[in-house]
Image (cartoon, rainbow, N blue to C red; front, side, top):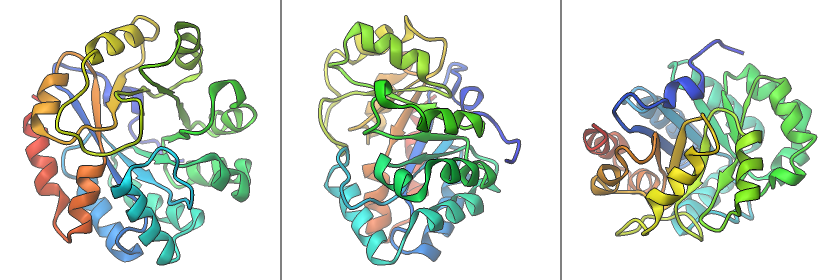
Length: 256
């Protein structure tokens, strides 16, 4: 594994809000995906989240679902996503893989962990892997020095929240809405309270995600979260054949 910047270090607040960009691996095609990934990785973001396309993406909204379908139609696989991650990781920005548990199990969890680490990946997010059922997969990821990022939602009980924080490394992912990913006009009320609740249970950076797409959203998160994850808005730009870095630069201005 390449000794790059760790997630916890990359996302630690220093007065600014850190931006984590999301892209779907293999969208709009494999070759273009490498180019887009490299451009995003060198755009000033703190980390890049790469989605592994899956036929049953439970947490994803229509924009990311469609991108995943396009990637699958172009023959994207777990192995190809690891190759993609390896090509982009050379730029030095921490890479986080976002995948569902079935592709990991089908690939073989120990093999997946070893090859992800070898590719220079720093962490893995598995939205449909409950913390209570995360072993032995999470253990194999940890053994390969990969951060295991678990998600907290507005409906998470205090008892589960503590367990999620205890089992997370790199950062804790705060889902700001009860639902799927997708750009929204306004961020939900009660979000600062949710972030503070998580902060009370962990020294790790706290990242907000789902529904964040506009500069005003990021401005609202300044001093509330350590980082913000923007996915659907970036994927939509890629889908339209536009350079997503233009949007990213606009969003970065709002992070200061």
